[in-house]
Image (cartoon, rainbow, N blue to C red; front, side, top):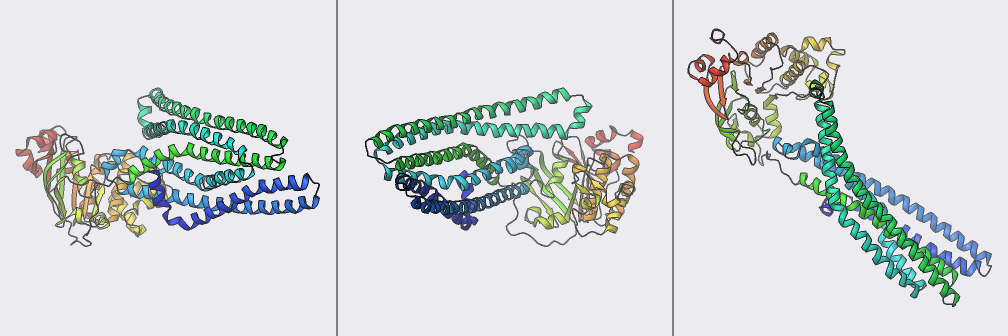
Length: 577
């Protein structure tokens, strides 16, 4: 998964990667040449007392060092830019895929996990790429070059390398094999911490209302302790790696000095060559240590890449049409024919054989007990989810065949839990129509019975709105959401229990103003209050996902027992009549 992800998203950056590899090659060659020059200075300059030779070769060493520094700076520059571009592209791809998900896919992964995958997981892959560009590219060149040059200096002494490299490789491999499952468990525990923290921040009022601070503190403490324990286990393994490598390095250095001293004493080797051999040994070991450092990051990056690919490989159940309809008659005729919806793996469908017609200039209401599928039914129209059977038609065209932007302009939904974005009142109202004028915004606010409280806010239309609209009340949030849809001016209005937080007087005033504003549009209202929908032109009664009655308030009161029970649970017999 990791190789596939890197290959896919690094393909556009082949030129800078080529330059980077060339610079790393040059700086590594310079590093490898310096010990040889140092050996020549010792043997031909220091031992013989030739000061001119020392100065000339010393100047050459300074020049090569400057080349090494310049190449290294250039390699790091290109590596950092390429790794940052990789992170940007992968984050963008994950974000685009998540944006295409329906409610089904979002629920499948969970919001905390999607956030972790888009941020932390991508960052791990990006860090691996950066370390690869800055360290790993030069490591094999340095290792192979060091071995070749060490063999050129003294073949018998190079036997130490034959013992050192395999021992280090075995030690590193044993640790890496145990790290991978630990890193996967650590990412899952990180998801859990994010989920618990998100729930506690979002549900802060509920926690305080029920005085469950201690319980929530224990929940977070447990999730945090689990993550800490896993991180400590992983860290303990990682902590073993460097001592093991350094032990092997120091023992090999002792062996080289021991055997090299005997060869110098026997006249088979010069002091400069032993010094150069020790330098090459350190370079070989350093390259192995760089590779070791990389291998420490690879298991976690592999796990993160798998989690990223899981998102990228998941297709939305709401598929854009291949040959979309780009124009409608714009009459707002809505028809649902035999529609049903079943969640994956569910024993029973949420909706079963729903038939419904909503016409322009009319108000169609949907009512039913909790869990009867009212919100799911409305979600079929703007394609928040797709019907698993039957079809939904707008102006005689299946919504699955309509171009998504056109469908969004045609259908306006005010959800059951309205959400406002961080910004101002104006930016939220213009969400559906960026070109709306201030006059249009104030008109929408007036219809939505929100003009009064917005005028009282400091700044009016420019008054700040916190993320989620937490700095306004529930009723104000609902009215702003209704005004946002009115600014959009769609042909079909869907109100999903959008008046539940309003008092009866505001509810009545809002419905009266809406009836004039949406006189030529199609209006579908889902509501729990009978007073909200009793004057609708058509009322559809849902029970356990089925339509059990359709008609006016008087007709349903006369011959529909389900509707009658709902009404009498809220009104007296006289009020209902």
